[in-house]
View 1 (cartoon, helix red, strand yellow):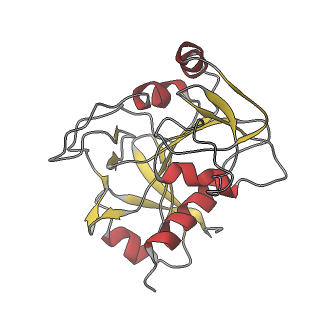
View 2 (cartoon, rainbow, N blue to C red):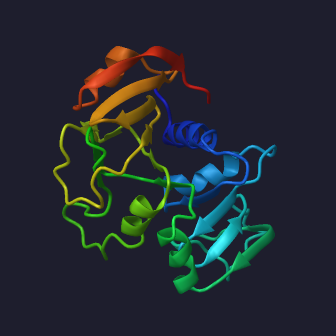
Length: 221
């Protein structure tokens, strides 16, 4: 089944949102990770933090409700839930570097079986640098990568990253439209598989060796 770009992003965001616990402080990176905010269960409270100085972000606002003065670190307009607050960058990075972020959700260009992450150097493009990602991946208690499984058909989950690293040995979980993979002891374990995919399909588009979990489950989306 051919999935639309929108459906792929929704599958990933919905599944990532199930990783959080009541009371967690979570940082959502720019791009696809911001969509996770739209699918967090109403039964739990998750404090969404942005490194430009926000905590307590809500779902993506519609155009009529958006406040042009409130944006996340990527410049996208965001909503603020009741009890949310604003602070300076010094305080924001104190939260991150102090180990107070339970999980960070980031996009990636490449991830490898050692848990290495490359998500800032786009080949052939001028980029400003890795920004707050280098702090988040070492400061957060759990690092979740939310990304499409391939880039123009090329594998993004590799034996070894070929692009400059954002951080080494820090990725815990990878969520794509094809499945959920956990990195442990320099190995990638396939824990869940999408109902739209198969083990053969995932292996075909993954360069790194995948170890199929004995209790492989169907991905909840």
